[in-house]
Image (cartoon, rainbow, N blue to C red; front, side, top):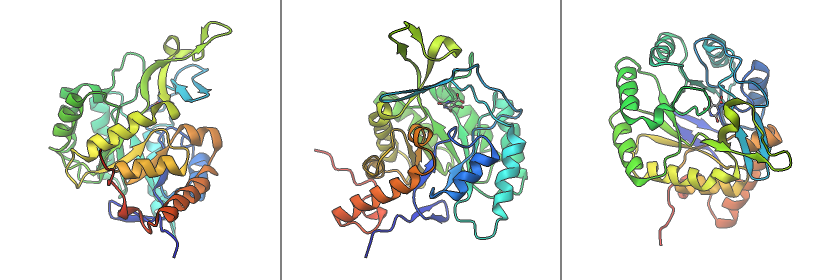
Length: 314
Ligand code: RRO
């Protein structure tokens, strides 16, 4: 018998663990519908702010040989647009890959308003609170401010009762893994998503001696091959520190079955694809499914549960 990629996450079984990473191919209903019709096991909306935003001036995304740099600046159609979409999908007969809702308020007050509206709405699905947008000028990432993170989670969980996870920035020090895990373990989080892009990198156009992005003098979030080791480290660090009820979504550098297998081995349950989806379009999901299944079958695994989290140490 062949291997199954069935993935159980927060009470639902998805046909495979693959999703888009929020921000890629998910700003408009047309793009979201393409994800719905693709082989992705589930999908997520662009992070929504209370009010629609144009985002930063272009050019604001650039592909490089090893990945990407972006400074999109949270362009989105506004929270109401995405809430209506995800609620409408719940009613779709035969839905197989229900959308998750990503939100990123521009202030604590906005985040509380948005989450309050979700709590009061008919949406019964999964919400992801983005604590790690690196690209809004003048707005530091919440996930790098431990006191602020704790304050936000305390206020949110005083009223929010639906499945909620947080999208985290990458951390680079054991002290920071420890502090963040201790904070996260205090709250009834459903999942954490590791990682958002590595913030504020800089890419140089050698010939013209100029930056490749217009906003923020060229500084932007790095994704793709560059970030896979950092992503795996964050998945592993939180998998080994968080209460087992808090699941991990692995994001960062996934473009092949091997990358997916590595994230799962480090402890991820769902897997999100950003840069590679941007470069190759939604057909990448078929390829990822095939490649992951081939690796599992070669190794004699029939389900992901047989190896999830079981990375060995020397
Ligand atoms: O829109 C963006 O610039 C953006 C966001 Br909100 C994010 O969370 N991560 C990213 O790389 N870009």
